[in-house]
Image (cartoon, rainbow, N blue to C red; front, side, top):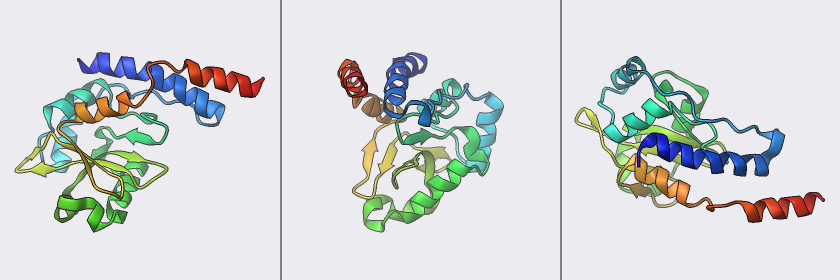
Length: 178
């Protein structure tokens, strides 16, 4: 499935669920416009590594996604500059126990955060190796790391946790509000 299709399909349901759960208290923020080639080159220069082609294609379609899930934001090419989200992600990487980092403990200082939770210590990272960013995407959540073979696999796993329809949420919400 292409990134534009994947993003479009997930976004519709994520937006509806987000608005149902949070209402006006926390407005839904859609994916950012895609990154330019210059922004991607700047990011690769900053991290001193060539981005994995799958993640790079995601960034071309969505240069970050502030409301990816209720608590997780996906970072974009702003990784090349110090932003509040990047600082938060780096703080989370530093706070996760060595045991929770598992085999990535020795790589803590070079992990590249690509997503961060604003509610937990969860941080999603990729690992540079010999001038290239490995395709595997790792979710650190202060237990054992969850490793996905690609950024697409991570994205698809998150999308698969949403129901295919939120009718049952909507009905329950309307019943409570009535």
